[in-house]
Image 1: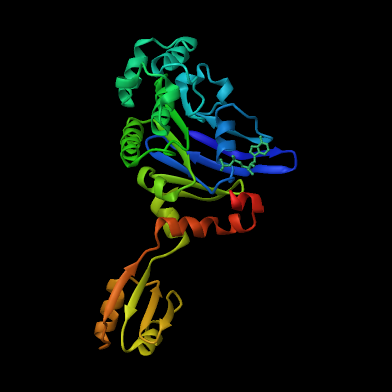
Image 2: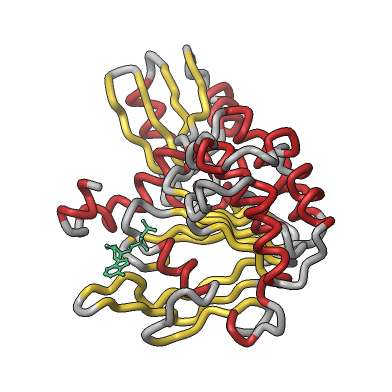
Length: 305
Ligand code: ADP
């Protein structure tokens, strides 16, 4: 379990994270979503002890990172996949980490196998593609067989096969009771991988919950109705809990009633229908809606990045 409470980080006059509170539960994959500059890396850096909060706290299983008796065995971290000595082989990179953390050397072979790098284990990491580098970073995060995994933009640079691979791996790790927390600025990536979402913008919490709850919180589904009797049907449907808009003379967009309810309502009153379709906004549209204000009022630098 990861818990942030009123977490705030200021760099001089710049507030990177502002009064952020959320919880990440074990057993599911949680995506940490926000546009570039939203404060995701800063939050993750504070989570893994690379930076200190200005105020508030972020804890892992009730403890600050540096108070954990054996942090690497408790929390596996991928923050910067490029932080590898280019002349070192994948095997020696991992072995060096294992040796400094009292992890048996045999574990190195296991994690190389898990991430599919066994066949290139003796090759120089400097010659690795971006995707292979990500896999190596994930292997390092898994070395201590941690209960909690924190991955900053792990899907960055992976090809579609790599995305499938990471999805399978993270859901297996979550299914075994681990806490899995990964960041991305792309809703499309996270919607494939995550069960839950924490969405931030300009350092503030914008939404959290299951992916579908987050999406429906911003946009209830709309039913598109095409009928020659649009005006009469709209008048009949109108009510306190129903919103009807009419993009053209024969078309209605109805919120607050399901397609089935509208079909039965229209049938019982003799209205002719030419089309009746439920429309849900895409995950990407939902993300844009949630973060729109946060981006609009951001600095031009943040918007441009
Ligand atoms: P994200 O990971 O969501 O892209 P970051 O956490 O990297 O966002 O950055 C959040 C904001 O804090 C950005 O405006 C960034 O420029 C600023 N920031 C991050 N680290 C520093 C730092 N060390 N000094 C000053 N500003 C920083």
